[in-house]
Image 1 (cartoon, rainbow, N blue to C red):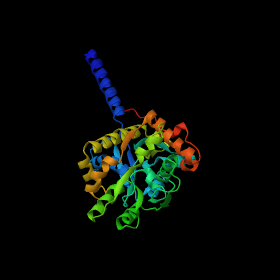
Image 2: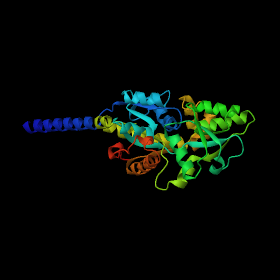
Image 3: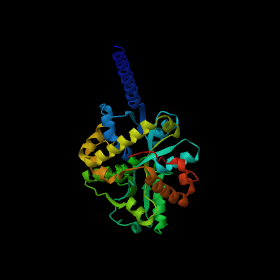
Image 4: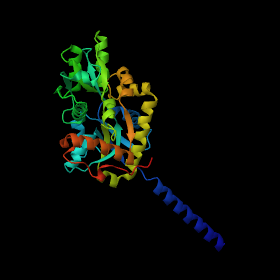
Length: 328
């Protein structure tokens, strides 16, 4: 009888230990606040946004579509967003200012196109002596355009910057702007609107292709997802779960563009699914992490720094700027 009691006690203790181990392994993940903006960064996240809304994710996420890049940056800096999308050079500038900022993944390569309404532009050389209207002054677009023009020996181009890409698009459609550099999906939308009015506006130069011709040691990495080292330290499991599900989201978008286009309209990432369907393949969505991201992004930022140190905040980021802890 005594032996039976001992055996029973051992079994109870064993089950209790198993329960404790199970509880330890099933640590509940905290909710992560993620900020995205309309355009490519939102496009890549749209599948995950839909799954999060339907309670179908492993992690817990609260997605917010920021009004614009300045809104996204402000909410990240004041702690409203745990993770946020932003231009790579802006991340570098903030790091140089002493902000706690770590790049988790590069999510877009180049998304810029030169559009022509005159029928006279076919190559970069045709831009000589002309005026280009562009958005993105003080950010990636300005530095990319100026660097590509300079490296091709084109020094007599006038560049007019406007804050609002949609205003540039409207100007092209109305005829007040003849040549412009616009990001996707605005570039595609502009061409579609012009066609509907019987006009021809053609995307004639892919700036990513032009960059690749002159910068063999770097990739044109325009967009990224960032967080803080403090958030990583406190929430390592949440960070890696987000990266796992964000990668799957980008893969889902690329695998079924039509479905992704419908979600872009539903979540206000791109106003019309028809535009999104044409634009998504030109958005150069990517998911680059770890040492590959560190090497290629550092190379890109180095090119920008050599062209204009202010473009990356005056100095190149330290190693801690790049998150290399994600295990695929």
